[in-house]
Amino acid sequence: NAEYMGEVEEMVPQPVFVDADFNKNYGKGGVTVPPKKKVNWKSMCAKLPCGQTPQQESERAKMFRGFDANGNGYISLAEIDKGLKDICQCEALFDCKPAIMRAYQAAKASQTNRQEFSRDYVEPNEFRILLVYLKRYFELFLLFEDIDTSSDRRLTLQEFQKATTKLQSWGVTVSDAASEFRKLDSNGGGFVLFDEFCDWA
Image 1 (spheres, rainbow, N blue to C red):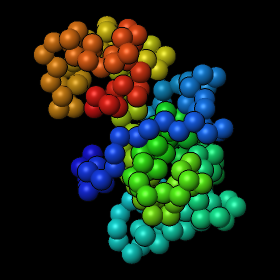
Image 2: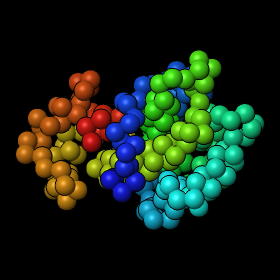
Image 3: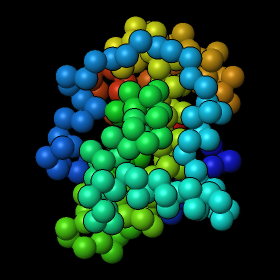
């Protein structure tokens, strides 16, 4: 993650859920879980220009204008969703609504001195942070999905226990899987959801 997180990881506070009309059930009930498929990580990352070179900044500005369908200088969650599919053509990322929601929340939370009307939108100066977080949370979603062998978008203790060797290969040592699982399961529901996994990771 360090390759593309840089200073952004330090500057963005913990996201807070925003209850706007489009956002209420985004990534939650009623979403069909797509089958697991191989993702060309390098190709996907190339479609999200996060760098700070003049070329990347130019690509990012053009991309923002493409996402900003009504040209008002702000992009909503719905516009982000549509832009990922139609402009970036990131089908794999478009399917990962939980990752998109986390990135959207984090980007908005990166600026504290916002106007009231703009709190549900991502502004141009937050767009790079949005793309950085899209990469970060999509990567975490792929890891989460790899552990989630039942493909129900929640982890059981058994799935977590079986993944300890895999976690070790990712640089995470879990000496007591049951105890660590209880830490992840912040609401005590008996399952670990993607948001809980992200908070832990």
